[in-house]
Length: 80
Image (cartoon, rainbow, N blue to C red; front, side, top):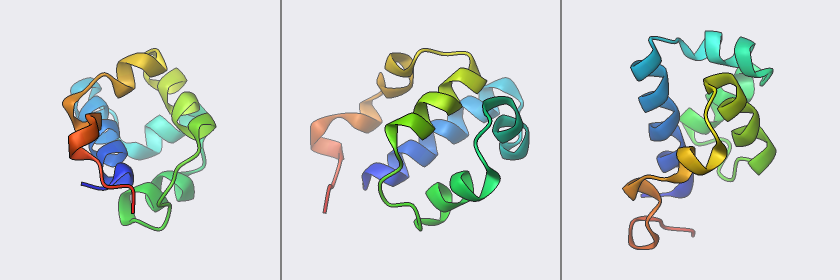
């Protein structure tokens, strides 16, 4: 799995868990919708840490919690 895919899955998980749409998350976090759309479509192959941090603010979680998932285990991520 590519890093961008793992990030998208994690965003989707938290949105589903909290009953949020991506649009609502963007509003809450101050991240433009096109940026999040780029993560989900693969146009944004390497999302910036600041973007993920701002999404975490919108989700009201620490960034460490966001990355605390087997999705981000070294063996699961393709960086090419």
